[in-house]
Image (cartoon, rainbow, N blue to C red; front, side):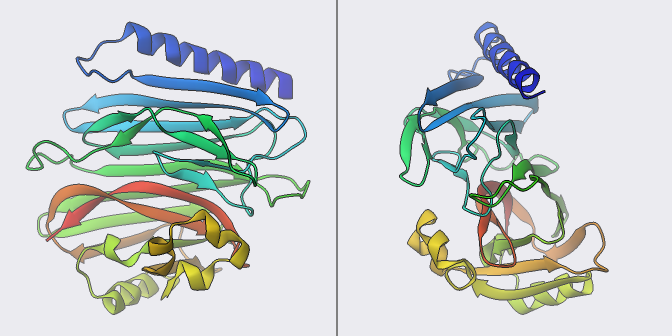
Length: 290
């Protein structure tokens, strides 16, 4: 079964690469970057693809697949800023896939995937979001979706599937945000400034009314000490709103907050377990409001 999975994934990667070579949308950046690494320290593939969905509606897709038959993969992909921690290593034969909506993009040919605890670097060019030329034309919604398999480092337990979605859509002078994730044992940390200029107490109150638990903290205070070196110091110390699901929480959290969307920007979502181990940390798209 593992051999069939690997063959299928390699075939998909090659097909994507071939399609990119044949496609020409007038953009100077290739539509797909793909690569494969194979040595004694790791065996994995990666790709970064562009999916054009319409005017000002572009999805960047990133994927990392682990082909090592015995060792889970720990990695950090600079450029897209997409990586896993010790609590979320990528099991053998599994892939992590992130889809992120943007309005404009460019190529980061200096991007690398740092893997293993030693942070060995494998070149991995990737598409990255950039500010739109004209922010007056915004998409009607943006979506970020992560589908990832994970398991604690050094453990041979059955891998867990994490499915996370953040969808935002402007409604006049208000912004609708919908967040859903699985499994419920995972907590997510969202930078406080990702909610625009909203008072943090008001945001927490609305989250709690939606049936979830929330508090203001910092990643430095929440993450296990062994995980903190994976994030930049300014992010560790900045305020985040930590959100957790209870046994009676609905399947998704819906927030309608004041603020007129004026441009598209970026923020981060950080998934961790209740012991403070980092599972996944990723850059995402958000609307800025005024």
